[in-house]
Image (cartoon, rainbow, N blue to C red; front, side):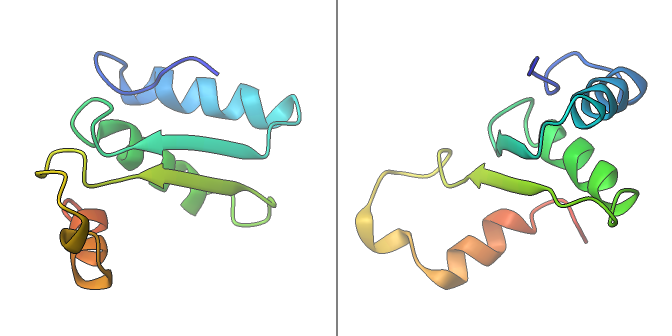
Length: 86
């Protein structure tokens, strides 16, 4: 699938995701560093409007942080995942 972070408009990102799902894609991979969380925001909004679909969404997180093993814990995962949702 084409990247949807960076310079993609919300309309274009939605169109890419919609086309992918129409073609049978059920696995969407994203990361907190793709377009400074923009791709995750697009995927999240898309997901909310497609709750009837069986989609699997994976994200990578913590790549902005120092790569220290002990920092990869449940509390930080919640903070990193919810950075733009409140």
